[in-house]
Amino acid sequence: MIQHTLRSLFGLDDDTAVTGLSADSRQIKTGMVFAALPGVAMDGRDFISKAVDQGAVGILSIPGTKADVPVVESAKPRLAYARAAAKLFPGQPKTLVAMTGTNGKSSTVDFLRQIWVHAGLNAACFGTLGATSPAGYKPMTHTTPDALALHQTLSSLEKEGVTHVAMEASSHGLKQYRMDAVNITASGFSNLTQDHFDYHPSMQDYFAAKARLFIDLTPRGAPVVINTNDKYGQHLVEVCQGLGQDVLQVGWTGTDIRIDEVMPHSTGQKLTLIVRGERHIVDLPLAGEFQALNAVAALGLALKTGVEVSTALDALAHLKGVAGRLELAGVKNGASVYVDFAHTEDGLDKLLRSVRPHTAGDIIVVFGCGGDRDAGKRAKMGAVAAKLADQVIVTDDNPRTENAAEIRKAVLIGCPDATEIGDRAMAIAAGIERLKPQDCLVIAGKGHEQGQIVGDKIIPFSDVDVARGLLS
Ligand SMILES: CC(=O)N[C@H]1[C@@H](OP(=O)(O)OP(=O)(O)OC[C@H]2O[C@@H](n3ccc(=O)[nH]c3=O)[C@H](O)[C@@H]2O)O[C@H](CO)[C@@H](O)[C@@H]1O[C@H](C)C(=O)N[C@@H](C)C(=O)N[C@H](CCC(=O)O)C(=O)O
Ligand SMILES: Nc1ncnc2c1ncn2[C@@H]1O[C@H](COP(=O)(O)OP(=O)(O)OP(=O)(O)O)[C@@H](O)[C@H]1O
Ligand SMILES: N[C@H](CCC[C@H](N)C(=O)O)C(=O)O
Ligand SMILES: [Mg+2]
Image 1 (spheres, protein in one colour):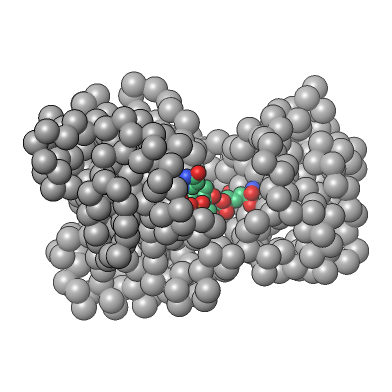
Image 2 (image 1 turned 180 degrees about the vertical axis):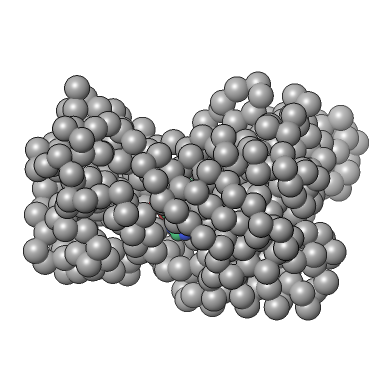
């Protein structure tokens, strides 16, 4: 089957034994087709001879590529690669929702999965946090996996019997055509704020990548759920209406699902929602404005994929928080310690505003910024921390290949009065040490992550485990 599919896809003769496809020469074995893709850091074409030595029987690449084996040329080889991946791993869950936006994707896809499960459906979600389905949990390396891994995942979920799946669409994934062969039923948009300027040359380019989900990948007439608080969301509403999509507007200003009132309390928030013109009160067991916004986006997507209003609202009242998103790590003499994944200026802003109504004393924040990522957000995150927290401790996130002290220095431009403690465990310890009974400590930036990336090594590290260890 694979043989025949690949042979016909790549126009190879009947005698050629074709065994698989990869875009990584290191994975090539006898009989495979090598997709030689020009990339960000390297050029796959530089590895063609190595791939052929290892047994590649065909090459997929851009026009003009030369090799000692047949070459299939494509002006968009990543698109051709994605289409080949979908043919190799056929089968996708019937209802497939893709969620995009700078912040809120992981939370929204998990909330949607929870609503579907509450409605009795065989549902899954995947992205930054890995894949969760009734069969269990599988880790993943990317928010939107490489096309081959993506179609492998979709195919195995469908074989498991999953009928409803929600996935995250990252701007990298969309720009690199990773999900162009995915059969999308509905899509969602949360917001667009500064991130990834190491990869996108401008906000326009970043928006254009996100907008591909709605313009190129979601079928005309399909439901799209958009948070209209966001100015890019408002623009996207016009674009999608122009294209004839079935637009559902949600959020504080949502015309279809509107958050009318929020009453924070000790264990969550009471939301008054106007859903299709009718008023409903939901006790959401999760704190924070951003979690309310993600919950209504998930609600919109659930309604558009066939869940009854009453069932979906009941599911919201039973929602479980997502790992590393405003996760309570513990309490010290009445002071709460939260771990969160805010790693953008807007995320940190929303996070710190979310804990304020629950904090009578000081908000102490411990955070840093990742290396080899958008350097422009560092001082801006520092400034937000200085503005909205009472005490700031700047520490290391994932320095990757950058000098950690230089990253901290860039953050400190925005919060010059902050305390600097490079060692993350020591910074968390200092934050806990400072806590008085009415205070709140927020450890931001790494959320669910189980390791700290230093150079090319991953050192085991979990904010929640470190905080719990220190609190016990
Ligand atoms: C910047 C970026 O998006 N890079 C992704 C991209 O790599 P690339 O093709 O540009 O890679 P490259 O290193 O320049 O190499 C070019 C080609 O040569 C090949 N190669 C390279 C070396 C070799 O020995 N042999 C070989 O064949 C590579 O496999 C690649 O096909 O395509 C690869 C395959 O899909 C991804 O694994 C890789 O993710 C890297 C590891 C990464 O860190 N990506 C992050 C930034 C990312 O994608 N993040 C997003 C968003 C996260 C968020 O939401 O905030 C995500 O979806 O995860
Ligand atoms: N709707 C939102 N608006 C603003 N900030 C949010 C929103 N939702 C989540 N956040 C903040 O962003 C962090 C990450 O949330 P989440 O993991 O859901 O986003 P994501 O879009 O999946 O991120 P990533 O790009 O890393 O995949 C949260 O911990 C929170 O601090
Ligand atoms: N998906 C995001 C996560 C950032 C998390 C933060 N801990 C960092 O390393 O910058 C990224 O890869 O940019
Ligand atoms: Mg995510």
